[in-house]
Length: 120
Image (tube, rainbow, N blue to C red; front, side):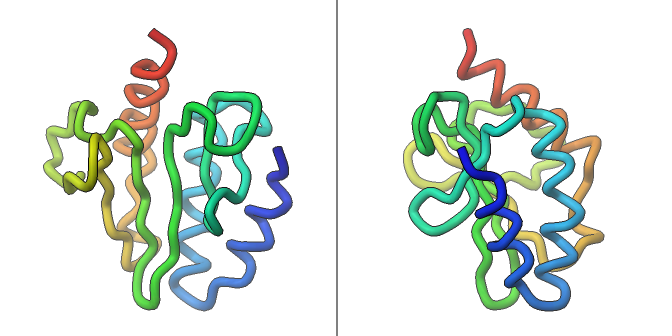
């Protein structure tokens, strides 16, 4: 997989959105195997399979005023904070409006749980 594509995607973001990417990417990279991230459907996705989108775990997607951090099976992830919002199928996500919205400890726990769901 090609993590340089993710770097380019995040570097193209402006201001607070780039700050969010710089703060959250190390959290994601430390929770998932090396080279598990790539652009898939136009945004960064981290997967456990051999190719992008195979057994996806999480994604980042930039919008005009926020970055969404989503978990494919996020509705199954314990979230005592109540920050994860249910989406389509089993997904859940959180909208990040600034780097201060990134909680490395909480997000690492979400990711640990999300990886465990995929590796059972």
